[in-house]
Image (cartoon, rainbow, N blue to C red; front, side):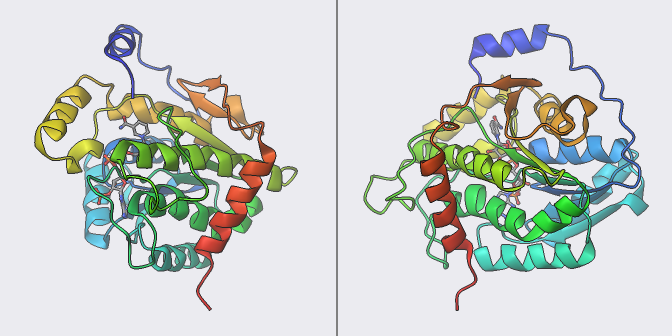
Length: 300
Ligand SMILES: NC(=O)c1ccc[n+]([C@@H]2O[C@H](COP(=O)([O-])OP(=O)(O)OC[C@H]3O[C@@H](n4cnc5c(N)ncnc54)[C@H](OP(=O)(O)O)[C@@H]3O)[C@@H](O)[C@H]2O)c1
């Protein structure tokens, strides 16, 4: 999340230049489309003419987001909804299979949903909640929808963060280490990048691409589950961050802009590529990818 200085610079800096692309006929899927950055990205893609499927935690939440986009001027007939609790691996597999049967060809898969829990929760599937939501859900959707994305020579975008690190491949669920919300979140965002770099190699040459976006520090609901003084301070601090529209810009640019056509395996903020320290360790990335694939496999 950005420093106050960065926020001032962002505020003074002009709004990102408009992206002039006609996405008519293109199919986009956006997770976490019911608030914050995801909702603004969905709006921007819809405004460019894409057919957008808004994925929410529940159908009702997704429908509310759909109605809001319609009230802002999006074409109702190009919007649709889907729903799943993305912290539940079985539910995400079901969502992916539903989307695969609805859309044999997917031009844009925007894996955006994310959470920042206030305590360590182990889901009924046995995974720490932020790991399941921020990392495994992306892997399930990418694994099960990649053929549809390849069919469209489409783009996969992961929403990562510069808040990344602390990954311990031997303790992904924090059974051995003392759980801490920030560190757990950072682990999920390190994993997003490591896993995306493996996908970039695996889909190379297919015409499909994958990139990771950092939206900057953005004033959204993400600190909303934090309680007490820390929660109150976090919410105040987030108020000084950039707007969701500004935060969504780099996501939308990666999803749609001709500037990045054919480019894959990059980590971007403000439409500029950043260096990623985890790119060089191909073996660690591959091992983590194999581990994630084991975790998301349907139980026998
Ligand atoms: N805000 C920042 O400063 C910042 C910085 C770097 C990266 N990011 C990343 O940006 C992405 C979007 O976050 P945001 O800042 O826009 O936060 P947000 O306003 O809280 O939006 C998060 C979205 O993810 C959904 N979600 C979370 N857990 C879910 C679950 N179990 N099942 C289904 N949907 C779920 C939320 O739905 P509900 O409302 O139903 O929970 C919501 O639609 C996240 O990946 C976050 O890590 C944010």
